[in-house]
Amino acid sequence: MSAGAATAQTEISRLRAQLERVQGRRLGAAVLPTLPSLAGLLPGGGLRAGAAYALAPSASLLLALLARPSQEGSWCGVVGMPELGAEAAEQLGVDLSRMVLIPEPGPRWLAVTATVADVLPVVAVRPAGRVSPGEVSRLSARLRDRGGVLLVQGVWPQAEASIAVDRSEWSGVGDGYGFLRRRALTVSVTSRRWAVPRRARLVLPDETGGLTAVSQVSPVPMRAVG
Image (cartoon, rainbow, N blue to C red; front, side, top):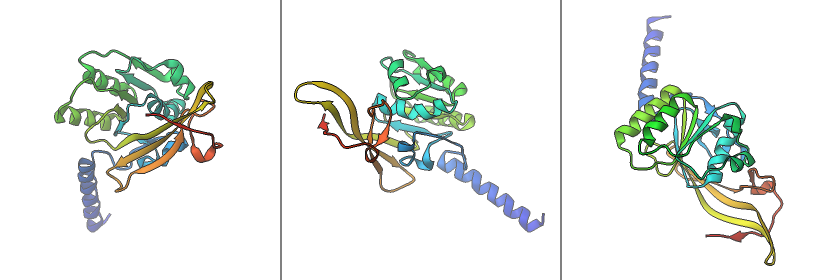
């Protein structure tokens, strides 16, 4: 290698390291797959290793995000969500053999989350209190080192993206009888990587208990809910 090429390579390495510090992630980091209906909404088409995501307080949305990684062999941990049921998780496609539930982590929920993130590639948590910038930075560094993904129900600093549910409608109830069978909702994703949020109309759960885009299912009367 010539002296000029060696200098150029050194400069490229320096710039890569600088960009990693600024962006808070490794360049070229692996991406965990998600269900196809969600993939087009997320930066990189999936859940980026080493990143955190802020989610709306929707159990169905969370389980939909956990479904494909668990199916592909990634262990998933859920911290601080005692109401999350195994039956609902299984119906939405989560592989229960690769799911660890820690429903009551106590006041040291952040330490528990960090410990779980050391051993499991995907961790979901509902914060039980505020976190300091220093705590966020330390957990972010741990995620980058381990290549883990953090899904937070609530606001989270330095999030790769924020995933919100803007509108929800149920169908299945007829003239005073019947059952709620499926729900159509608008999912919007805001990221620092684009100026305009990405939105999609999804059915979650659909008639099979899974997730599909509205365009992929037959139209049915919907009832708006608050």
